[in-house]
Image 1 (cartoon, rainbow, N blue to C red):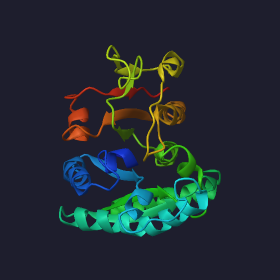
Image 2: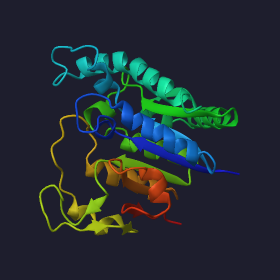
Image 3: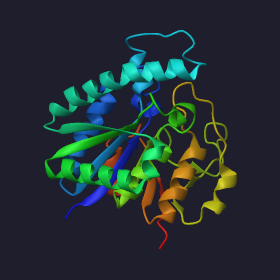
Image 4: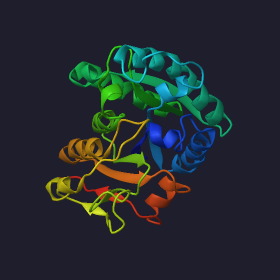
Length: 255
C-alpha cells in the first residue's frame, strides 16, 4: 500500500518570481510526480488561478476588490487546469479537478464524500488537483494562498506527509531576505518555539506568508500529519527533500 502525499504549490512558486505562470515549474512538478508515484498516492493543492487569468485578461480593480479577484479566479481556474492537463499528459499523468470551500470541511458527510472521491481517483490512476472554489469562498483570496486548505486536505485523506512548496527553504531564526545571519530551523516539534521568529516579507502575487504556513503546521501536527516546507526554486525539490539531499524545515506530527 502506497503512502499518501499532499503537495501544495503556491502562486509565488508557480510564477517563478514573475507575474505569469511558468510552464517550466509545472513541467518540473510533473517530472517529479512520475518518480513519486512509485511510492506515493499524490494530491496536488494548487493556487495560481488569478495569476493564470492575468495572462488573458485584466479586470479593473482586481488588486483591491474581492469580487474582481473572484471573477479573475473564475476565468483563470479553467486555464490553469488546461495548463496542468496539457503538461502532465506529456508525462503520461492524468489529472482531475476538485474545488472545495471551508464549509465542506465542517460537514462530516462532505468530508467523507471528498475522501471517497480522492481514493477513487487514485484507484483509477488520476491525480486530484485541489483548489479553493473562489467564486463562492474568498478566504484564500484574502489570506493564506491555500496553506490552510492543503492542511485540511491532508487531514481528511489521512495523509502521511504534506509538503508546502515555497520560495524559501523553511523557517529561519529571522527573515533571510532581511538578515544575512538568519539560520534555517530544520526540525520543529513545538510551534511555540518558532512563532516569534516569523517576520513576513511583502509579496505582490501570493497571499501565503510564513504565518499561514505555521497555522497549517498547527493543523497537521494536531492531527498526526507530518508537514515540510520545501524550496520550489531548487531542482527536483520534492525528490531531493525525501532523500534529505537539500535543507528544509520539518514539522513533526504529534502522537
